[in-house]
Image (cartoon, rainbow, N blue to C red; front, side, top):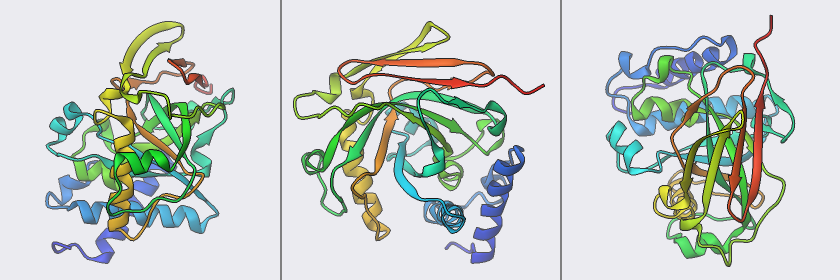
Length: 267
């Protein structure tokens, strides 16, 4: 792995693990190792996911990031990345997200998909991906970089589980058969004030392409999507920083709405 041994993988993983536990972000891994590869970064991610699973965590889905050309251009890449969603990352709508448990959170409104059947690459197309989907639900993703000041290269955020932190998913699943996902729009509000909007075309031109890409990418690791998995397909608008006490609401065409509330900082 380009000179990076298993010991270094574990050391980098430990650094990100402690950053989340102690709520103290770390400097980019690429400051220490500019040549860190994407394969090595996913190995770091997998190490910490395995550690969560060893402590009882259950994988419930994936998130796809860097799904817009602008975000890819910013980090100098030409494909998305992915992170793993475990059961303790999901927050029921109506429950308050404790701000003090996060480092430097941001939020995005996203279209989420629920898988109806297993799906593994290679060779998955947008059409076969859609055939494996039970439906779409409105979602708000809470991202939280363990890298200081969100100052990272692509491989840093891959190692950091693509900044996955929390996900609030709506309770109504809508079949996608008769929906043009490219045109499906959203209005995003903070404390009652509109602050963002977007449409499905912002996500690789069609959010369903994210499922196909993800299934094919996971296939390269000998893995795949499973029935019941929730897939966050990527941001429909710019990321929004979270302040203590913020209340966010996303109103989607056809899918309904979803809200996320954050606590005040404890005195």
